Length: 77
Length: 350
Image 1 (cartoon, chains in turn blue, purple):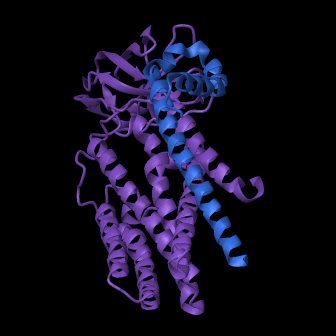
Image 2: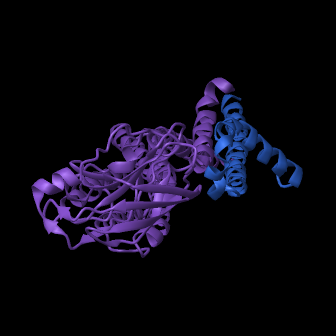
Image 3: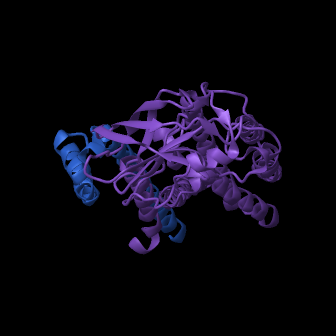
């Protein structure tokens, strides 16, 4: 679901936009960020992996909730 | 739905912030290159200074000092900024020195764009005459009007450099481990009082998640150590004690597997869990402070010193600790709920 490149780009842009105020504050010092040039790519990858894990947890959570609901109804019947 | 699950989203958000802000915040400027490091008293020395993440500029007024201590300072006679990371500074080193032993000087620059930055390398002054009175008048500048660089930055620490960010990813896992083990032992104690299988399921889930964090913490520590301490495993006291603690907890799972009777299993494992938890404080917090250690915290100092006390690092660090604790809680929550479902299905042939 989150594996296509359009979503990756959207995620990358989202992260950049969210932290653009930090960039703007240091726009005058572009050389300052020289050593962090492609770090955004790394961060986007890390965030993607993390969000993948979170979605797995959410899916697991909803499956378990459904099972608990079935058990509750079974117990009441 | 949000009412019950808000804390899950908060945990995810806090870890997300520690991943993004933790990785993207720049370090404060540092001076990584300084040549020459052997200088003679009574001569003029031209230093070549190389900065890291620095913004040296011709336009801002920059103080460049060479100082033995705060009472013996000289200012550069000529400063030439050749690039954002490079400076050439000339000093006329006086022939007189305050004493024969104190010959290692510090070189610092001070301006509004970089703050007050001291070089990692320390030039060593050879020769000269030891004359404290003349030295006092020769080395008569002052290190003052120190500037602080603005913005949200992380400290520049020798040897650690950019890997200071590992504070959010390695150290916070240990805190999350301690938190989940605490929850586990509370459940074990509750089980011994109530004999409720739910408490046993919770205890083993929390302990599982705790061990996961422990193993991750140990391996992330080994990766960090390879590049800062030189090797992945140095038999450092804290590393070793942590490995022992993980063995103690892994034995908990071996114990769980060795029983057939559910009630007996739960009872004995609850007792073992309490013992294992009691091992944490002596192994991880007491012994490492008594002995020399590569970790911050050896020889009686509190476990965090220097850069970790930095306010900016602290903010993100606390966020990541709380975030990982919440995610650990969520993972354990899912685990024991699935265990309860499994046991319900087995009981009722559902």
